[in-house]
Length: 438
Ligand code: HEC
Ligand code: HEC
Image (cartoon, rainbow, N blue to C red):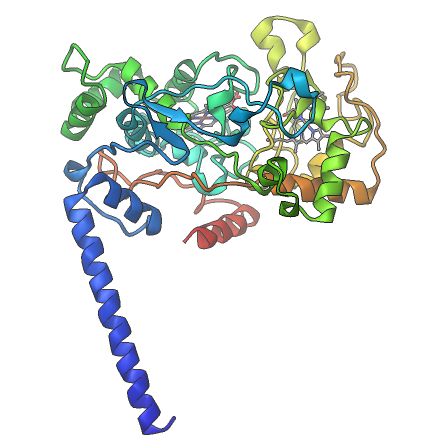
């Protein structure tokens, strides 16, 4: 390099460094003052490096993206699908159909408090697990495992489902044993296998933390008592989870009339998905890609494990043996492995399950009432590939919430992270996701 050119290069480099320093200085200023908006933006930009002290945390007064702040009525979801007619008028599998009823109307502060609770391992008995340990944003709010691992260190019974679009669900868990998000939260919190906490210990932890006391007062100014209540904890967690909306995928753009959003192979896949032969849309009904019902499809258990009777236990009805909630297929690309059992590692394997014959994986001697839409569609290899192409168009994480740089307990947000102690196959995938997000 000639000396003239290297001088130019050095000058440019110096200017670049000065610019970077100014940027970092302003970023630092933004963090130290923690205006809610600035800290949110920063957390989103460089999640891992933000480090405020818990006492600097201030709850956001802004609704999450996709929500309008209506003041008295809280944050209201705004979406294109709200312009469409009901499901009934359009037929199953149509693209321009309305969304079912959903939960919203929480205040920005309730939602943001829920975000801190969700990522704080202090909610578990031994401070090791936050909700995000098993519902990690980088893994589609799942954990990349066939079955989750809680405080007890051995696998829990089932695979962790995504939390995207839970605002629309009125039956929760694979076996639909909870009827609301508030009721659901008690499951993992107090299960000795998941977060291993008790009501008394959780309340003592939160009430003993100055930051939490201040944040709860901010989110629940109406509260009569100065003490934090469990009802407030469940409500804040629910508020945060209802903000996880994923309805802006390439598929959605196609559905709203922008046909170039999908390529020819993906459109072919969509047509197979909606066809009377494959019948996927009968259960995985757009726009949520679930009809919110329970269906018996006879998916296999993990090798060597006994049959999981699913909804039979919830309803005490033998006809529901092996029945599970029809899961949404939104962000399905991110949530491998699949099914309640995590039995299938890839989407291709999962989709192939449907062509292998009705009831082919049901253990011998078990009487299972397989749903009538599960039959033998005899899909070709090419059709199965196209189905996978189509399912990949349902990915949309644009409203992924920022992971807090610091949580009120001062523990590492997320706690035991599924991104760093997994089997190699999943770890690779997770690293890719992390890289893509930064
Ligand atoms: C140890 C891992 C683990 C932790 C920690 C955990 N979950 Fe889960 N979560 C699961 C598993 C596994 C299921 C499915 C269990 C079942 O259906 O029987 C589940 C189910 C759910 C569901 C139901 C979703 C649906 O579509 O039906 C919600 C909502 C949920 N969890 C929220 C939370 C919240 C909030 C927390 C923190 C308070 C939390 N989870 C902590 C593993 C975990
Ligand atoms: C009769 C209703 C029904 C039909 C028809 C149906 N599914 Fe499913 N699907 C389910 C249920 C129920 C589960 C969960 C079963 C379990 O976990 O044991 C599921 C699970 C899945 C999963 C895994 C989701 C996850 O989060 O792990 C995928 C992918 C899937 N189905 C795709 C399809 C495709 C593609 C078709 C069409 C070829 C189809 N389904 C047809 C009911 C149905």
